[in-house]
Structure formats: C-alpha cells, structure tokens
Amino acid sequence: MKFRFAAPLAGLLGFGLLLLSLAPAAAQLFETKAAQAFMIDAETGTVLFSKDADRPIQPASLAKLMTMEVVFNAIKSGRVTLDDTFVVSENAWRTGGAPSGTSTMFAKLKSTIRLEDLIQGVTVQAANDGCIIIAEGFAGSEANFATEMTERAREIGLEKSTFVNSTGLPADGQQTTVRELALLALHIWRSYPDLYRYYGQKDFTWNKITQRNRNPLLAMDIGADGLAIGRSEASGFGVVGSVSHSGRRVIAAMSGLASDRERAEEARKLLDWGLRSFQKTEIFAKDEVVGEAQVFGGAKSGVALKAKAPVVIFLPIANRDKLTAKIVYDGPVAAPVEEGQPVGALRVWIGDTLSQETPLFAAESVGVGSLPQRALDAAKELAVGWLR
Image 1 (cartoon, rainbow, N blue to C red):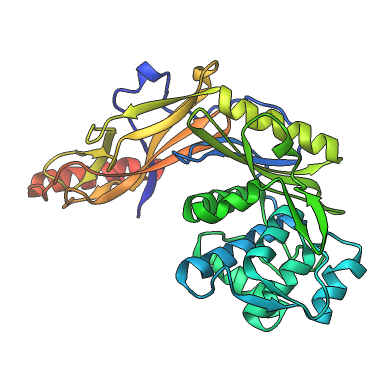
Image 2 (cartoon, one colour; image 1 turned 120 degrees about the horizontal axis):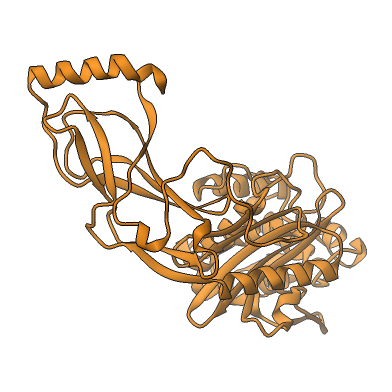
C-alpha cells in the first residue's frame, strides 16, 4: 500500500519557504467583495489569489469565451477562415437580435455576415445574435454547437464547465467556475495571439450602429486588453479580465458581485494588486536538487528529486512569511528507481492558496538493495507504516 508523504526540501530557507505543517493555513493576503475569485500569472502559471474558485456558477455572457475558443481553434486548424460567411436565421435574429432585447450586433434577418465581423460582434458587443449565427453555421443548431463547446472544454482541461447554449443565456445545466474561466482566458491568450486582439477592440460598428466595448476595464489606465463581463440572477455580476504591464500579465475571473460599479472596482483592485505585489523569483535552478523521497528496498534509503526546468514563481513582496512549501509523493518509492522517473510534486502555498505545483523526477537511479537491506526496510514499514 502507498501513502502520501511530505519530504524535506533543499535550499529554500533563503526564500522564506518552510515545510508545511499541519497548522491551519494562513489567511488570504487580499480581500475582495466577490463571492468567487481566481487570479493567475500568465507566464509561470502561479496562482496569485483564489477564493471559492471551484464553486459552480452560471457563466451568463462569460460562456461566450468558450464559443470564441471553438471558433478560434477552427480558424487555427483551417476548418474555417475569417472570410467565410454565415446566414442570419430567424431564430438567431429573434432570440439574440434586435427583437430579443439582449446584447446584440443588430444583424439583419436573412443577411450574410463574414466570420470576422461576427467575432467582433461577440468580443466587443457580447452579441447574442452573433453567437447563434456562428453556432448554427458551425454545427447546424445551437444545441449541437453547445455539445461541441463542452467537448472542447474537456480537451483543454476544463473538467467542470458544461455548456447548453452559445450565448450564456439562462439554461438548466449550464455551469462553470471562476478557476476554469481564468484558465480558459489564459489558454485563449496563449494559443491564439493573433485573434486574442479582438478582445481589446474599443468599439465596433455594424448595421450602421456603433457600440462601445462592454468591458469596463478597457477604459481604465491599467493595461487591460480583455476579456468579457457577464451577469445572471443566480451568480450576480462577473468579469474575466487580463492586464499587461511592464512585461507581466495577470488574468483574473470574478463572480458574485452586486453591481456594475462594484464589479469594475473590485476587478481593478485585484488585477492591480496582482501586478504590483509580487516579485518573480527562481527558487530552484535547472537540475538543482529540490529534495529527497524515501525508497523502499533500494541500495539507498532515498532518491534525490529535481524538476525538468528552473522552478520560477511569483512571491509576495511584503508577505514572504506567508509562503509554505512541501514535496508530496506516493511512497515509499519502490526500488528500482530509474533516473528521470516521475516521483512526486513540489507544492507551494501563498497564504491558504495552493499557488503552484511542479512535477518532480528522480535525479538519479537507485538499484534494488541487498537481501538484508530489503528485510530491514520491510521491518521498518511493518513497524511504522500503520501510523500514516
């Protein structure tokens, strides 16, 4: 039987990192009125803030991020082009167009529209008609397209997000989390840099009607260039924002806010704090030993562990004492152990937020021990294994 171990760390005390104890986790370093919030550093993947980030919420208009991911992926793969045209059906016009009273790009019934214009309608104006036109053109019906959205969400690692339509309009069974919304935004930024730019477009004119981008962060002098806002009765006001400044980018998702104004203020404060309150730090160099894992039945009692690349994290500037770290692995690791074999992970917390997890691998090979060594290990395991 294998048990979860915490292993000693090598050379971390200079960074204020301590082996995590069983004491209660430290409090958050930042307070927000949002019911759910999650923020990540785009370069390293460091989680800078997390508050109830895995609670299911209704995505509302934020579901359109997944609609655009499917579209962007189709463009990247050559399935469609920006010049392809799509027909405005009566369903799209009535459900998401001018008669609907919802966010719309005012597409004309039975007209044809280029995909690039539909993308701008969705990213700039959160156009429901634009989403439905795309969905019907891609998959024959919005229901079929929603299935494609959910399947694509699983492909990129979003396990809790389920989509019922392309717009985010209220529908039973439609849900996501702020963690997955932020990770989706990060994926879009990383995977489609030439298409991501549409989220920063300040306005768009269609059918002789000009509308400003609905994202309030774009009007602030904070380096924002995306992504979207949403609102539902169940989940309140939400936002997914991305800010770039001085070579750094942070992405945040928030939900459960009480008003437009509170959403804008809380998002600005969180993103600004994420940019200003952390310092990039290499805590382990490439090939540097991170720690050791216990070996069972081996020629040595332990095996050194290392990451495959430098371990880089953003540390809080003013609260380094709030960081804790440990190595975890299923063990003891049975001999023989091959160099490069995956063994465990280095987990780092900022306050009570699991900030980063880095896979660790055996830095050396450890052969099978002699019969007396194996007998001694078996006796030790029999004596103390039950304590775990």
